[in-house]
Image (cartoon, rainbow, N blue to C red; front, top):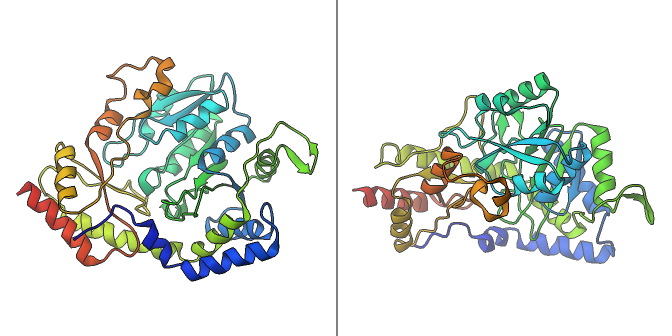
Length: 367
C-alpha cells in the first residue's frame, strides 16, 4: 500500500468542477484584486471564526507582521514567542524591528508553557504571540489572563488551527489580532498563497486594511507607508468554496487522530500528543515522538508510508538568529521535540484501511 503524507492533488480533485466554475466566474468578472470575492470571503471567514472582522492578506507571515504593525509593536519592544514553532512566528517579530523572547513549550502538548511566561516579562515586553501549533489551540484563556494582568497585547499565530477551540471559544478569536494562513497544505488551503487577520477590534481592522494596500484607502492617496499584501480574488473564490466543508473535513481528521491514539497507545517508546485541558485540535498534524525517529521514518518509507518532520531545526538553532547568540543547550525542550518528532499522515479522504495499515506498520517496527 502506498500512502502519501498529504495528497493535495487528490484533495483538490474532489473540488475540481466547482473550482473550475469559480475560476470562470472570476475571469468573467474582469476583477482580480480587492473585489466582491474577497469581500464575501472576509465576511464568511469572520462568521466562521466568530470574529467581527477578517482582512485577507497575501500570506500567513504577512498576517502576523501586519497584526504587530497595527498594534504599534516595533523597535525596542519585546514579544514573547514559543521556542517550539515554525520560524515564521519569529520572523514576524523581527520584521517589525522587535526582539524575540522565546519561552519553552509543554513537552506533552508542544504548545507554549503558560506557567513560564510571566518570568520572561520585562519593562520592554509589549506583546505575547501564542502559536496554536500542529492544530491544537494553545492555552489561550490563560495567555489572555496574563496579558491583561500586565497590560500586553496578544497576537495569535493561528496558521494551523482553524476550527480548534480553547474553553469552547475558537482559536483565532482571542487575541487583539490573529494571523492565519491558507497555504495549500493547511486545513483550509488555497491553490496558492494566502492569509488573513481576524480581530474584534475595529481600529486594528481598519489599520490592517490600510497597511495591506500600500497604506491607502483611496487609490493614489497614501496615508502611511504600507505594504502590498492582498488576498486575490481567485484565491478568495477558491477559499469561499472550501470553507463550506472545513468543519466536516476537520471532523474527519479528528476520527483519524482518535484511531492513532487508540491503536498506538503503549506501542514501543511512541509518545502520543496530549490535549491541554479545555483545548481541542483540528489535527492539522498528528505528531508523535520517539527516540527511534529516523529509523522509524525510514522503515515506514519502505512500507510505502509518507511522513514528515515538523520541524527538524528549532528557530533558536537557525543561522538566521545567530545574532542572538543562543547556545546549543538553550531551550532543551524545543530541541528534544525537534530531535524526536514525526508527523504521520492525517488528511480528509484517508480510509480506515490506510490508517490501520500505518498503525500495524508502526507496531511491527517495534515488535
